[in-house]
View 1 (cartoon, helix red, strand yellow):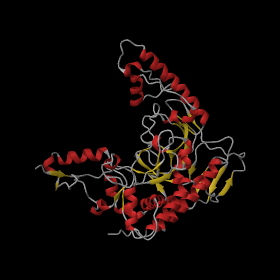
View 2: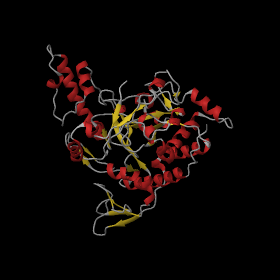
View 3: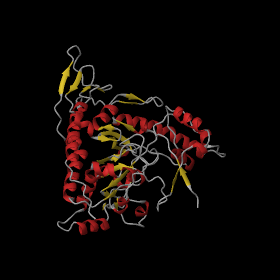
View 4: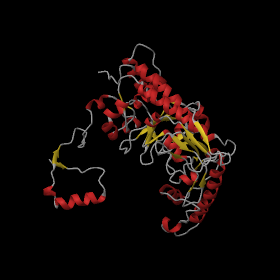
Length: 440
């Protein structure tokens, strides 16, 4: 049997530090190796992992998706990956429409010319690489090779959760989105957004802190962190025409919960909210951090089911309906030397994060420091707003994205106040979660 010898350096070392380490040790014989043995799952880096995690209910597995094992949810999948965000996403419908019509015309012209070729070259030698006309990706080239035409239709422009508490308009299309994954079964038509909800969670192998967020619109592939991907667990699934709505929490899971908590009639919505509450618990995240990097979450039975379910329901309401929350009262400091102006170019937080420089005319003061405790990925909710709500121009395509709304000039100021309210309430709810007492 093979023997595994293991040594590690600091994960934050820079390139030169790694070179220095190799030069100092000269060859493998001078390195201090540790002999380790894999566990029953053939994992050999198991530091920090807890065995009891394996006894919890799996949210979802490959086997359960194939109907070969039991889990909490039947279906789950990633958010949409466009591979051409500048074209497919924008704060303004007119920009999405004009950009997509223009690039679809270019693509369809390629398809027509390709189909008429008697002798076909390599795809990469055939396509127009002008990034101001089109952005190619692996799947788009495959569609070209298959002779698949693209179609523009206004109904394909959908509201999407691009980043935390940041909605943009998305051209939702199997050809011009590199991967749509299971989203056509989660939000096939606009009307499903009134009913369905998704729990988005960090996928296994995530590099940034574990995160979760509930949404009621199509999520982006990188919804909570630009370097990680996320899996989405819906309450409902549908046929692609919006019919045949089915609850996605399994009957097996409902039976497990009703057996464990017989005192009151549990519903699948109660379980859905319970899961969301558990995923927010600081002790769950810290204690099982190593497990969560290895696999998707498993959910324990805890002593206070209803405490978690009720907190999860409150968190769900806050996060899904964040635009309906009251604005936190900030101090508006206006520059008397500048004209009234609600337009954002690029916002900036002060060094102490107590103030937000909105523009040359306006500074928003009195930001409560505890809101920065609510993090999604590597940023707080407010920092995501500051990062994303700025005027930008994509260098390759030349497409601009302007978050300002002419018909609602104070929309961004209002959103800032609402996100602060949501952050404060989230921190309060998370801090008030019941103790994580796991039942045997």
